[in-house]
Length: 110
Length: 114
Image (tube, rainbow over all chains, first blue to last red; front, side, top):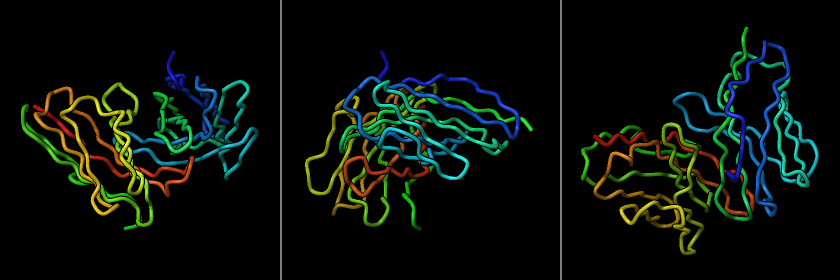
């Protein structure tokens, strides 16, 4: 079982819709959870971090964490074509390295 | 510049040659990480430096890979006797070094081994 799992997609949504990206992780002691956006040919860009169960909102983005289910998600409201990218879920334990999923490719059509 | 910087942005080398990749972290960040991203693969952790502590080298794929960090700032990743499977984008990230602190990535170095 992979440590961090994501559906590779592509996830296709029309402009203005809500995109829902999901991630599960295997290490129960994981403490910190991150979503990165990566455009083709570019490096990952941090979008959100979440550490506690529940929702965390930042503009059009909402991260959701459920530690009991070992599940973290990212909702993008009012999706724009510029949101088309690969979204990487990353999990950390303490001070240590980030463990990344392989990413979900999101396509937002005008 | 406020972000993580890396050089060179692209490196083409011949199999068997040594290469050095450089990373300059965000000012004030004490933790520095190296990752690798290969085509079709996810981001793979290589090595982690935190202040003056011994680095966590658990992700280095072979003894051909080494890294150092001088003066708690700039880091150099060295790959000796490069192989074609070393071709990848090498990414550096830095953070303030606290548990779970956000990591910010540099633009990466694309290494191609012919």
